[in-house]
Structure formats: structure tokens, C-alpha cells
Length: 555
Image 1 (tube, helix red, strand yellow):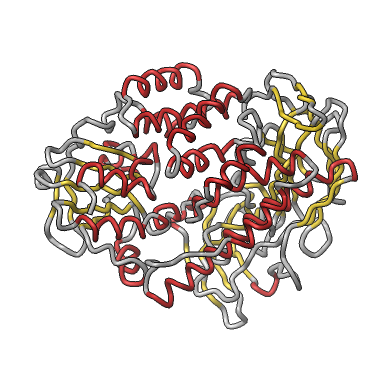
Image 2 (cartoon, helix red, strand yellow):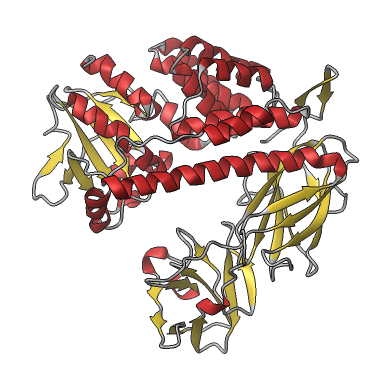
């Protein structure tokens, strides 16, 4: 969030007014202080704290500070507002903690215990990247396993210090190793191991026996002083949501393993929803609001709240609440499926009533999308002009690109020229060869979670409309064709046209479709005449079926 203003506190009918100037933080005025320990109960070797806006990240903090050897820290906050305190440490997972400062003189005291990295039980392969290859994942070197169970890498390098990280010991992340003279934050929540060398040959050893593997439960925990117990409850709500999503993913993975794919998979979120329902009745207003605004995010995982639940959510967290943030989008998308006009009303209220400019912008983005979806072109164009002129700094660039009616890839424009070679075939397809047929161009990747989440809807859509002059062209952004082949064999068969985009993100194809800006998944529905009929959100989840039914008819 860029700016703070009103924050609704429905206690005794009081509306607390905060400043509307730019958020600032200093390290010389007490705002939040406390102690941080690692998973074993002692301070990590290297720990840093970062203060961001509530929806912000440790990647772009307002303020960062190294924690003392005893684990104690203090960060000053010069004005009230909604913030997030991030803790990063060597050998540990990132912790993000809600922080609400209500008065200029307020001092929040907290004690934080971090969770260690979730290291793999065994290692099929350990790779290393570092100074010598500019930390490029695709150029990582394989470490050589030794008889004693350690892994070794040697290289010649002309430097006084060498930085490195390991791949393959934690899923999906590059993290510090077990051999370090000191550490340096990599800007992404993890740390580089730093070695002082003699400027010639360097020998790096990874010893799995030295990894931090705490006994018992490996979960981050936070306590606050008596005056701020509501912050502990807000952190607990986040943890409950995260655990529910983790359990969902585990269950889905198990289902896929048993059934070959995820078709037919469903998950019971009742444990999470029962918990959220209870928290929405809390006596503490911030706790009630936070449970309410997080509830709609379950929509991303296949859970659709009913109309009565949406009513309780919107009554508990009014549109002016500065906790809405990233929950505006799933609320609008989920609510629109059952009550389109109410979704428009909510998005409009957020835009008009919320004093935080970034949340206003998100409300306007969703209102623009709803008008675009309904074909209200004049209203949509007018709203986009306001977005571009007044919210360019608050709204993510990819949102502006996706909504821009003048973009080359906008609704009604010709599909860009393209030609790709199909996977495992010598045949090529192009925009010219696809004329005469409805088709969905779908940019995706095997490592993209949101892309994989769309697979059930894509398969259902294909089976429904494949005999009605419709097909799908999936364009993978994977670096290796083998990854796509394995995905087809082990997870989803994707029985339509498939290709891997050469040079993926650097390709002309990615640039022409703006995928290098908007990211993936990026779907585009093309008419038999080669015109773009719909893009992005109109083609994801349940909206995919509604959009296809509009052009191809119900089946």
C-alpha cells in the first residue's frame, strides 16, 4: 500500500482517523521490538527484519535492519498504519507477520520463533550456483557425491570472496549451504553462503549431516504483549489458511498419483471454514475483519462460499477496510459467479470508499473487468482511462497491459502472427493454418501452480466443445520438452495441440502476446476469422465455460 487514511474500527461506533501522507519508517523511534530465535531456540547466525506495506514484500521493503547476535531488534515506525513485518534468516523459512500500528507513540513487543527450511529427506542430485555462473539456475553445476555422503564442487576463480547457493535440497528454492564464513541476503528471502578465498581454486563441501533438522513440529510461532494479542490471532489466521492450502495440495498430489490425473478431485475445506466462521465472531474487530477478507481466497482452491457466507463476509469487512488488499479480486470473481450485480456493487464500493489508493485501484481493476465481461465497452474504456491516468503507480503493470483496449493483444484485435512446431511432431501450426476454427491459445508451464490449477476446466472444456469446431493450442514456457512430456504422462494428458515455445520468455512469440509482461497462465480465445474474442480472467476457472458457451453455445 502506498498511502494510508481511514481504517474502520467498529468498536463503540468509533472511526479512527490516521494520516493520509506517504508511509514512512525509521529505526530510531520504537514501533516494534522484540527477539527472534531459530527453530532450535537460539538466534540464527544471520537474521534480518524488513518492514513493508501490509500487501508488500520483503523484496521491496520500506526499511530493513540486521538483527543483533542475541536476536533482539527494534524498528521505528513514524506513523500509524497497516504494515507487515518480515523476518529472513539463514537456514530458515521466511516469516511474514501482520503489524497494525494505531497511534504514533505505540510500541508493539513481540517474540518470534522461526521454522527451519523443509529439507528433503534424501537428495537425488545437488546442484550449486554462484559467483562463477552469475547465479543462473539453468547453468547450475552438479556437485559430486563422496563416499562419506558429502557433496563437493571445485572451480577456479579470481576473487577474494565467493558467494553460492544450493539447488535440490529444498523444493523450488536456492538456499545457503553448510559451508559458510558469513551470509548475504539474496533479495528473495533466502541467503547466499559467502566464503573468503585465496583468489585461485575454491573447494565447496556440502555436508547433509550439518543441516538444521529440528526435532518435533517445525512451525513458526509468534507472541505479542498483552495489548497486541489481536496481532497474534491475525498471524494464527494466516497460518490456518496456509496449512489448509498445504493440506489441499498434499491431498491433490496423492489423488493425482492414484488416478493418473486430478480430474474429479475435490477437497473438504470444512476445517478451515469452521475456524474462519468462529474468528468472524471474535470480539476483536481486526480479527473479525481479517478472517472475513481471507475467506474468499479459498475460491482459488476450488471452494465457493455460498450467498449467505458472502453476505456475512461483506457485513464483517466493509469496503473501506484497509485489510482488503489482494482479497478484492477473489471476492469479486467468486461473487460474480452467483450474483453479478452484487459483485459490481462491491467493486464499486471498494473503489469509491476505501482510502488506500492501491485498494481503490484494485477495486477499479475488477470493476473494469466486470464491464468488459458484460460487453459494456464505453464504461470499460472510461474506467481504463482513469486507471492509466490516476493509478499507474498503484496497479501492477500486468493488470494495465491486460486491460488496455488499445493493446495489440486486446479483445477484437487480430491474433498476432505465429508459427510453432507441435510437440513430438514435425507438423507446424500457425495463425494462418488455424483460420476457420475457434481455438484457445494457452500459455502455461509445468512448474506454474496457477496453470496446473486450470487443467480440470481446460480438459472439461475440450471434451465439451471438441466436436464443435473448437480446439486448444497449449504453448509451454518450459525450458525442456522432456518436462512437458513427463507432465502429459504422469499428470494431465492434454489431448489437444501442444508446443514448447523456443527461447520461452525471450521469444518474439512471448513479446507479441505480452506474456513477458503479464506472465502465465495467459489464455486467449480466437475466432474462426482470427480475431481475439476474450483474454485472461474471462477464460479462467468457471469463467472459461461461460465464455465458451457465449460463443459456441451450451452443450
